[in-house]
Image (tube, rainbow, N blue to C red):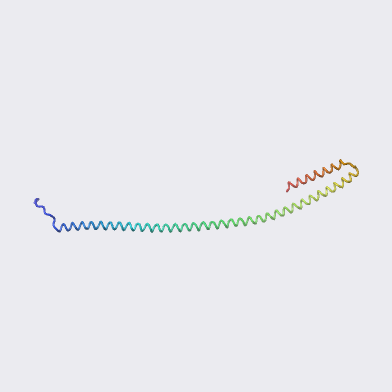
Length: 160
């Protein structure tokens, strides 16, 4: 019986042909499925990117709003500092005016006292000149008056 080899029947050939077709159909279906998965993956990536870009845009807007709020707060802080400085300047200006007036009155009283003393010295000098008639005494009084005047002016320059 080994010598008799029978070709497969039409039924077996049809089954093999259908199995091959089924395998080809499965490969085509798998290829479609892979394509569909790739398309879905691409679609999901695009959606994720769109969401991500939208989120970044909202963050940027929030950052810009925060920066603007900080800028306004800093401007208000600087305005408050400037207002305080203006008040201090006005106060200092008043103090300077008061101090200058006080100094003027003080100088005026010192100058009046000096003039009064010089007047007395001149009276004494005229009386002494008449009695002694010496010019050397006159020069001594003049020199002394000038020295006193220079000393007072030096003192006033240091005070001012």
